[in-house]
Length: 174
Length: 425
Image (cartoon, rainbow over all chains, first blue to last red; front, top):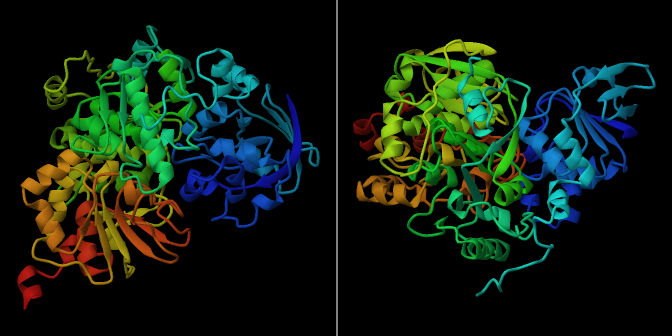
């Protein structure tokens, strides 16, 4: 998978309360993305175009276990490139099929507004403006399979392990 | 090959003779804890066709137990439907045996030494105090575990903390954690392992405070060595098999760090993060006026935490401009604190005592901060916006420091409160 997109730059230790604030969690899925980073960069979400790429520093996604990667995907971001990814957040990226790579050196390779070219399977990232190339860690095979399925729930669905959306064993009031 | 505790448990649970950092392992899950919040309308809940083993599943109402709106009520209804449909016996619904999940997991000895426990909450690291590879995973992964009984981990390198000495009076495990976070910062993608002669003087509750808080420095697992007190505790509460797991001699650590507990003092964090952002209270220096104080959460809702607060609050009243919220970690702790008169002392000071819930820690059902409000809290997390408005300021400290500060109305060292005799004249 090759991804090309416009770059937005953020720093170290971006946490899940910034990506998906608790008061936003109960909102319908379609309304969540517009609130991303409202505390640290108000108005940013409205400027994101489908296919844009987020470049960040160390430990991106630290904090709580909420569907923060889902919100990033739903905002239209095509890829996340970080110096390092929080362990729990990496799982979220796999679960919600958000292509996200750990790429040491990536933060200083790009300025905001640059274009990034990403060869996802090989985890190679290039800045066409400067010619700089940086190498990240490729995803393990099991994670790539989930990405190809479109997410873990989608994979479980394809395996026939879960009921269709909206299924219920009995009326909730029973 | 010599292994750390995390490596040994992950090897055993994945059927391998050894694992090493960087490996991806598929492990058997001994305990799968499902929370009420998963069942809310937008919580991502999907019904498995069948589940791997109902006897290995636990369901707990902790984010929504007070049913503060219709959506939460629906979440609780669906959670009840889940336990009924699959025959899950270990269900802690609002009522006598309800509590914050990680406290209930501790009270009931659900985190078994040498096994794997997963739950959707990031503070599931708490179970590491029980020598259990316990951690948060995503909601889709909980669905996967319910279906197949298995999940995956990327084995991380381990940092070993070697504890010596004993905590001085008035200094708690929370202070020890704040010291660790300030000095060593983030541990992303690393396991933490606690051991050494100093752990003898640290009870299971205090160990759990430390393991729980390790989520704030992004650890993968936060495991303690087992000892006699742990083995007795578990054996006295469960018939299930468990496997106390010590590290091998010669296990490889990315770093071994010494903490002399006797040298520690009360600590406080700055706002927004604890990573390289904590300091001794004595060195704090600023005059910070408080609007809200909180004691509670999966990190600081134990009976010991309530006792530490009551000792300071006895005969004192909370500053009139402070909203002081106290949340016992489970309803079992609530009842014991009531029987011991601790809740009466806390209530007499003017604190608001709430039922057991995640509550103010994430502004879930109560305790939200308004714009510009300042909070000192003995809970887990101080990210911007975590407890309400993003312009609010959140500082973290121990229950004793929070209680003393609620009385003074400013961030205050417990040793600096006016003596009781002087205050009453």
